[in-house]
Amino acid sequence: MKIIIKTFLILLTITMFSCNSDDDQNTTLNGCDESYVSTEMTHTFSTANGYTNLTAAKPLEVHHYAMRILEDGVICSIGYQNPTNYTGTYTIKITNNNNGFIYEDVLSFSQTELEYHTISQVLNVEAGDFISVWRTITPGYTDINQANGTIINKMDNSAFTFPITGVNVKFLSSSFEGGGSAEYDTAIPHIALGFNAD
Image (cartoon, rainbow, N blue to C red; front, side, top):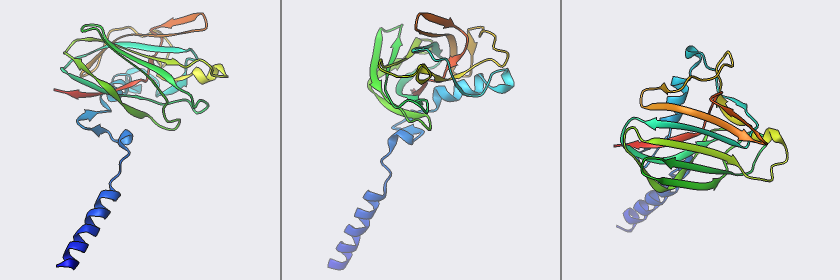
């Protein structure tokens, strides 16, 4: 009997410690589809539709876009990728202009891949709510190129004609600002949101 109990405890211990606890790399976390907005972006703004692949550009401090998610649910995570020459942080802000919700946090992300962080508050969305997303580089960066972000352009470098509707997301506008200059609707920043649809 002692051998059976010891064997059971050893197997239980091995099972517990062999589980991967790196939740930031999972595509679904507690019902959160982390690829939700990223997939909408890459499919809607595909090369087949006249857009570029993801590229690092727009060395401006603030990257922003607005959208409507076309189904009910909860925004549950934020995903981004630091440029290879920047290990610092960003202020990430998400607002739901319909219900007044504001989420803001200071986060750093992987330099080699899109990394997600679970947001610490519940951001409920009703189909059609107006959502704004900002990424602002933290003051103290040492090179303007550290303010570059991952974006999608049009192949001919023309302005975007918003709104642009995907399957579950309608993209409404974008802006890039900083250093006394601003660009509107010239690209879409790749700031991904995880979403748990009802």
